[in-house]
Length: 431
Image: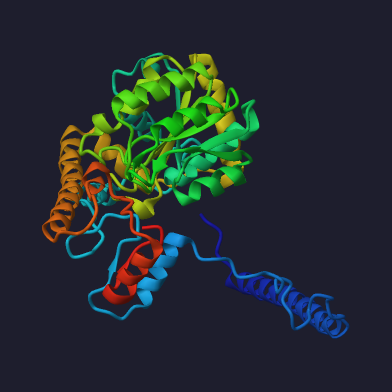
């Protein structure tokens, strides 16, 4: 027989427990009151900091100048005209002047959203493995000997800019020659990226204003006199900002000169497939250099060709002479990335990987990509035809010879100013 439950003793225990808890709470409360009193007394005795004057410790700073391209957009945004047009922004626009999100991207995003197995955990320092593998195949080709021999190291980067910066810092730490040659002109951020990475920036001739084409002889002379081992930045296709690219025959001469001088090529590939409409054609200059067995670096961006501008998704690939060296390169790239941004973002890379590894999605992407490229080519032709039909003075054939989303019009600052003030058309002052 079970013993009876004695309610009185339970009640006594509860009462005892309650009063004990109350005492502890009273003690804690008194402690906080004492601490608050001490803090109030301490605050009354604090002496003003030497920097706690009316002036900020940053009052000595001067206002930084606007980025030339972003400055165009600022001026455009301030213009109330309903017919204004911004030609300064480096992003694709629809016929209505609106940003375009590719249909294939929207479909993949819906798939990712509905996949309940996905999470938001950190990804590895080098990024998503599938993304890296597929990015290397895209730029080098699926049958690339460098990939088959495990001589390629690929890491995910923060679009093209971040990939260039990681590559620059890697070279500054581990490459014997800290000079990098950039074409004149080049993308305005190149100089800043490589300077801050710790490299010394020099230039080589590229654009010939007189012909609005390539200064090929000047390019060969300048690279021919560069110190042995120097790094050379090359635009893989659709040169930014001129739209002037070497022919394949000229690329072969450039390759021969670079290899004979033991220079190190660093390709910036921001427009693969976006220039000609063909992913393979736009990658040919890079593959030409890989085929000779030499070493090189490539920065890729998916901002333009997938319209993933704000996702900041890109890759850096380094081709080495052996699989063993490639493995060591990756280990050192991790040490560059870890203190810079720890690990890259997951969303944009997941979109790219999903498109590149699914045959149907990939085919749909190439159709949309070619449509964008063809529209740009067609708009160049329309502009050229309109200028010629109006009897506009000068030779405007450079508009259809140049390729990609950028063009050097040949207009001078005064003519650009007239376009802006009288017609509300905004572009950089160099035309």
